[in-house]
Image (cartoon, rainbow, N blue to C red; front, side, top):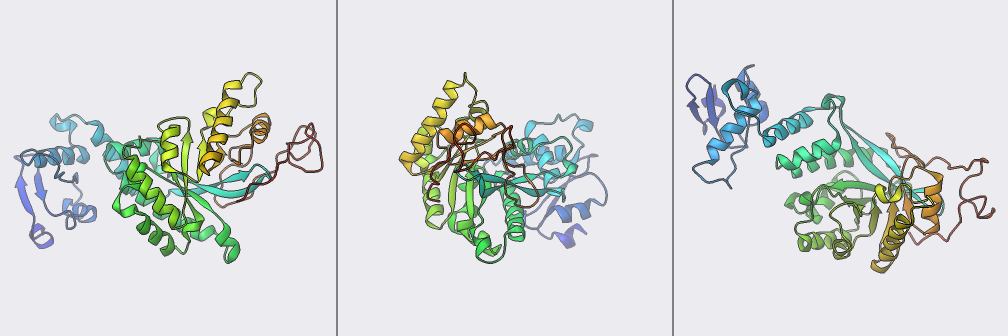
Length: 362
């Protein structure tokens, strides 16, 4: 059967432990390996050409043994990379992941400006969080495969929920990417635009959000990619600004259309003793104006914080106070004060409502 299915394969007997099969990756797929194993434990691992020739097959064999679950039985401890590969195998095998949409709200009107797409894991992932899976993808050296899986599922879901006709074209959605994926050929600006159009959408509907799970190692290349994306109509947002690797210098170099202020800065900004947080928010707003970007405050959960952010002319906001994520895009819920008044109005004064301001040009 092996010769029939894989004529180019090499099979090596491993004493009493089983067999090692070496074949081209395009031929030895997960599905075929499952059929060849006939119910017995097996592991499928890539041969890394960057490894020295004398070691690459031994390393791949060790990985395959670990993935098979037989490592402990033959005295081979599990490495972090192997553990991460197992997490990713489970992630790709689950079929109950789904996408939810959280409104990003214009703080001048408290109406939805766009929706961030949030990928929710299948119950089959157990206690794993999306952050756990992102870390596993990085350790297992498969961030591009991870993002490809998520982006394709997300674009398909956006196409299902976007309103038909001109109203649907005006709906905008934020989609998260890892920096490593944005530098991969499969996500080059033109290729990403083709993916978006193939889903029946327009690049003008998509805001690429660059997450901070890893450092921006190659800022010049990423800057060129951002410029190419913007020329094609995509928006570009730097996520979690102020929390990790995205310094003012990096943000300025990338020239984003949106700067998302991390929730650790936002939460509590309305407190009397939060002068440092207020100063940071003011700095981000001033900085964004200078580089032609707009600001989004993440994690808004209290009316006091909302008031402080509006007072400092932050453009947009998102958080539980304004609207939780849902399976379809919905307008944010009304935010009311203790007297039941909606916290935005041109007809009431500052002491009874959030101070109105002129809506920005967007």
